[in-house]
Length: 349
Image (tube, rainbow, N blue to C red; front, top):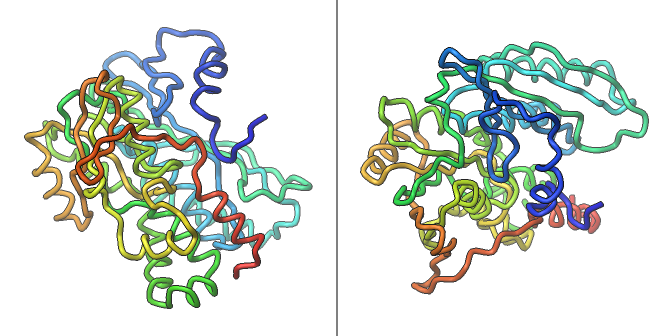
């Protein structure tokens, strides 16, 4: 069906899927949209329900605990963009037939614990074992939360004049996973210090605290948020801006790229600006609130950088490099996937 790995591309979504979403119901306030992390359904009486779904991970090279962490927190990151934590979860497990009972119990215990830690009650789902299931995707899940309708944020709510903020660093999750998947190569090529630092950053791949800290005060000034997944920091900014029907100016030299992330990405011939970066959050806010939000995040040990501004749509989405502006290119396929599989095929350990 597709020549690329990863999510369905924008045109396939807009031209086909978006037009075929079952019955139209008035209660659906936010349905499937490009660059939007959640759907929102009106429950009336001032409340609404936000929902998000994602694949679940089971990656042997990472481990059962780490796979469970990704399964829970990648969904939680999407929900965090609303400004609220997830409350309920539905989990569908399509597990490899060869997974042992002991490994299943370890995996599920971590799912249970990580959900409990962030306040999620698992309300149901499906559990099965599938012959021939050799994928690193073990099924899928849905997180749900209920909150005041007028307080739920969606990535398309950013406005012209808003400042664009990025938490943490580019390529956070991709460099952590690559280092942990190919430890011998990373140690030998760029050194043990970079390997251990990249591996340690794995548990920074939750952006729930980033989001809740950003909006924790009344009239926080936050207008929209979008978590960084495929396409990296630049892809996430592009998606948020397209979803909101605006343009943007992004200053390349301001994009946060940590020394560790830069070193690992160079080893795998990756541009960290375009790599999967779960754990970072794109935040747009009113200009006068930017320094206050940055200070609040940094007081909670979450680095945050101002990288650009939302502009009128007719100005386009522009990347400013060395004082020269060019149209931001959106990568339909995240280069991380090819880097991972090429390393695997080349026998990197």
